[in-house]
Image (tube, rainbow, N blue to C red; front, top):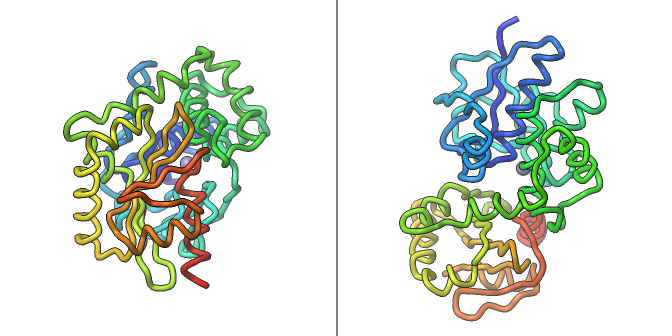
Length: 308
Ligand SMILES: [Mn+2]
């Protein structure tokens, strides 16, 4: 059998990198050769954990042209692949998004379950099949679950995520305050990093013929960032809106320490939409909302409203 490519969406976050890395190990230990390949640039928090624990970076690839079969971890929509992978090549999808396009991959065996992190689904494969996991994979998966669930405070968190971390951390042995280090590692948005992060973690969707673009930034110190750099954020959002021909655009700014969100949109129509679906109130271009809500929770609400 030819090796199969395991990858995630382009410019993957820690969940994608960790999931691909560990699923490669799982397949290898269960007798299937695979190649882990990342397209684009991993997020800062993925680099942080790879660097801190001296884990070899997965190789970077340009596209899936050299592979006949592809497995997607933490990805299940075409936009996120940016045309680099032919949908027919995808034979397996492991993801945790309620709004997905799994039906656009005609040959894929699909596992989509609404847990906090794709990493949880990968960890469960080791647990269920009684396969020993390496320390590297355990560290990555553990970190990914902590990150994706916002240290178990995000509304996406399930008991399965907690159980997976309990199992993984017996091997990973991450310190108690690891979550703080991880969150701080992605909170440095000095200089050009701000614009890069907005573009690097941008996702867009089409509902009822309307294109909706959503940036997401997770940070400790959101209020200060917004106070000092709101104009830059707005400029980047306006440029993306124009370049991509979007109907709606906003940034979901997640404040990790104080546990609240700041929504930013320069666009009145978007502000109205968000005020309706999230029960918030904009003051100029910014609206604050208590508790933590993530993009993958907001997308279904917008879909419902636009498709009414
Ligand atoms: Mn994920």
